[in-house]
Length: 243
Image (cartoon, rainbow, N blue to C red):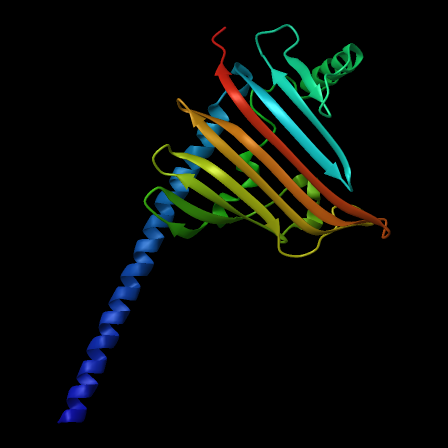
């Protein structure tokens, strides 16, 4: 009689666990559907933000194998020459350097064919079909996704992974992190052993703007040359330009 009771108890516990597990799986699947929809809306929100209507300051830092360069730039879309070099390697730039900088920026703008949005294409970067839920909380949810970056070549496919952090209240993607899970070769004789890229964003009155880009990369080129690069772009003082 006692053994029969124990069997019934075990069967009941197993049924409860199975029911709870089934409910948890269904709940996770439902949350993922909602999260995917919100991510798609967030990407659209970023795409619809006209970056050319915002003035800002841009602080750049690069370190290539110990060769360090830095600059502070200002973008003012209402000016005839929107880009201005404010500082170069910690010093005031010369008139020649300011002119060369403005000409370089003008060429870059021309090659982009006047596209209003930034060159960062979230819809291409984030494979929405591969999104999976990592965690969810009161203020954020985190999703993992497969990454494909055209500039890194076909050899990098399957060797990059990413995560995004979605801000629930302000309804935008606040952070994207990308890293490699294996070595890859973006071009002949080049080998990347470590790659970490982070994009962070901010939301201002419905507009989604880039706050910071950071990239760290290690590897080798032509078998003997070391690759050890760090770059950091920080955007600040955003002001919307009406005219």
